[in-house]
Length: 121
Image (cartoon, rainbow, N blue to C red; front, side):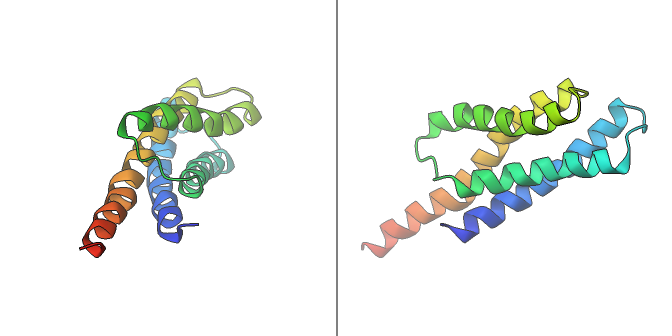
């Protein structure tokens, strides 16, 4: 288990969660409850943690596919329990999955690969 990967995933998810709650507030005219917004943000945080827990994807072209699939699955949890209220928020979960995967790839996986190559010299 790579703690750095989990931490960066969680931070990225938390930041994207802020964008989510701002977007949801705008889309719904500020009528959403604070608990709804918190759980929306928490879903994105959870998404980041899950991406941090799964093994790193080292094949670049697979990152968007895996990001969309896992991002939508995690978003489906919130979307279904909230009564299928926010389709846009659900779909954006796929995009956020891609973003989190790329952030983890470039901040953790690439750096680990380059440092292991340098250690071999």
